[in-house]
Amino acid sequence: MIDLKNIYKIYKLGENEVFALNDVSLHIDRHEFVSIIGPSGSGKSTLMNILGCLDVPSKGTYTLDGKLVAGKTDDELAEIRNNMIGFVFQGFNLLPKLSAIENVELPLIYKNVPAAERRKLAKEALEKVGLGERINHKPTELSGGQQQRVAIARALVTNPPIILGDEPTGNLDSKVGKEVMDIFKDLHAQGNTIILITHDSDVAAQAKRIVRIQDGKLYEES
Amino acid sequence: MNFLFAYKMAIKSIWGNKTRSALTMLGVIIGVMAVIVAVGFAQGSMQTVTNRIEGMGSNLITCMILSTSESKQLTLKDLESLEQSSQYITKISPYILKQSNVKYETNTKSTRIFGTDENYLEMEGMKLESGRFISALDIEKNDKVAVVGATIKNKLYDDEDPVGKYIKINGTKFLVIGCVESVANGMEGTNDDMVMLPISVAQRTLKITNVTMFLAEARDGDVIDIATQKVKDFLFDIYRDNDQYVVITQEAMLSVMGDISGIMMLILGSIATISLVVGGIGIMNIMLVSVSERTREIGIRKAIGAKRRDIMIQFLIESLLLTGIGGIIGIILGLLAIKYIIGNIGLIQPVYSLPWTIAAFSISLTIGITFGLFPAYKAAKLNPIEALRNE
Ligand SMILES: Nc1ncnc2c1ncn2[C@@H]1O[C@H](COP(=O)(O)OP(=O)(O)O)[C@@H](O)[C@H]1O
Ligand SMILES: [Mg+2]
Image 1 (cartoon, chains in turn purple, brown):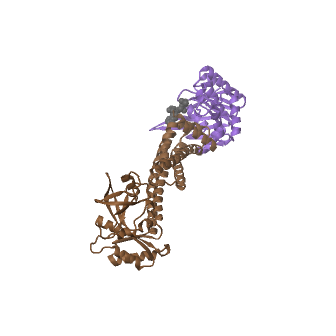
Image 2 (tube, each protein chain N blue to C red):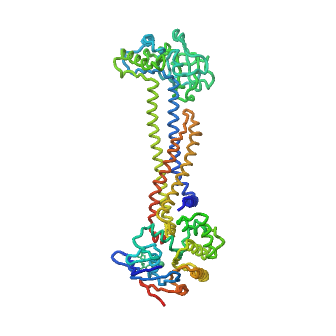
Image 3 (cartoon, each protein chain N blue to C red):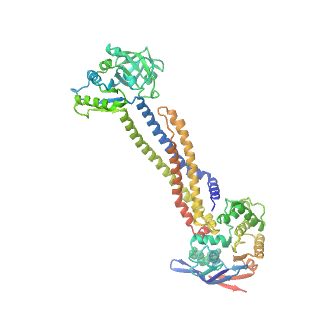
């Protein structure tokens, strides 16, 4: 499913080169539940951006679902993101002017799904994350936990093979964070591939497989 | 991306920033309104003048003597011989003109004094409101009679019928025998602002011996060219220099009016269009602010699969809607301004021009696209990672 081979991401800061990712290789199969853990500045977000096709590596090859992600245009990457990846961010990243259900519908709009079907799929996704009500509320009228549920529903709604979470519990208190983690576990049980990025070892421990990242290098934990 | 949804989003965003959207639209509103009012005003005033020229009849020839020579002067006798010399010229009405003070009781006013003959009223296409016009007998007998215009009736006689009253010109009393129907709402300085005397009396009162202007009437519209040539030849015989006089037909006047009208429309149209462009720059300014304010939103949209085109369309529709709504408000205000402001001035009849309204609206939409393009392109090009990092 996901195959990273000798990936480098190098940022140039004047004369200095920062190796945000330094010779990273990683293989993730379908239906896995992987967490990537590392301290701040270790390269987690950089790795997530590359995995999520928001960015391309400086060196190395990334094969996603058997296809090489290289030399793609912005629009082609957008299409891959739309079809293959569901993002869940630390800061929820919902559009404040749209209602919960409209936020969930958004990826389907960019997929040109007709309105009636969009509604139906969005409702189903919201029900899956336990948010059958309050779907017409604006994000500001929802609690942090509810907002993150909306964000997860948005990640789910296109039924993508991979769900990528970047510190999805980082902005939530531990009780609500646990509830959100339960949703991810549920989704995994239903057959989704889940990759969580975190600096919290308690969160990481709930995954089936833990990968440690330190100074841009990956270490598998067994 | 689906357009209906894009419209919904755009309306939400416009509605969410009401004050800012209204201020942005103001430029377009004023621009479109300016086009409609300016063009309405120009066409209206041209129409008014054109109607008046047409009212004079198509077989009328207007002649003005520019020469100030003491030795070569046009006399009433010359004109009589001109009238007799050609079968194509049926009538000639000479007139002389001078600015002078007129007085009735304690009311005084400066106005134009015309000296003319019995044909003038009809040839100019004017009508009497009361009394009678100057007759051939008045001229022959040097009767001290006068016909006044609507402005004089208003200013000197407080809008009462002046017929039978007197009017004092240069110290001489004249009996008012007629009052002309208003042609320009009684405004000062127009053809309503005048007093007409029998030409013989006027020559004496105003101390003018020669004739400075006359109207000639061709037998009918078909022989107007022959008649015009006849008049030109006649004047050339006297002055031996065709710069000393001007001979104009109604057709020529209409064609000059057409030219002036075209130029006026062009100037007013350009000024109004410039104001529209300025409005467009305002749109661009606000759209750029909007793009930078919504960087994070754009990042989110791109992360979940929006393509460049989707983002472009979203912002283009927003600027298009801003200019479209602004354009419609501008059209409505422009029509109201034409109807209630210009229409009430009275002198000119404003004209509502559908083609220019369509043009103004299209220009505003074009401006919406043109000036929305750059901000939309900027938004579409944003890097999603950097956009997401934006707080
Ligand atoms: N756009 C960038 N330009 C320069 N350096 C960057 C950029 N993005 C990340 N870095 C650097 O790369 C390293 C890894 O960053 P990041 O992936 O954000 O770490 P984490 O998410 O684990 O905190 C850090 O040293 C960071 O300063
Ligand atoms: Mg990070």
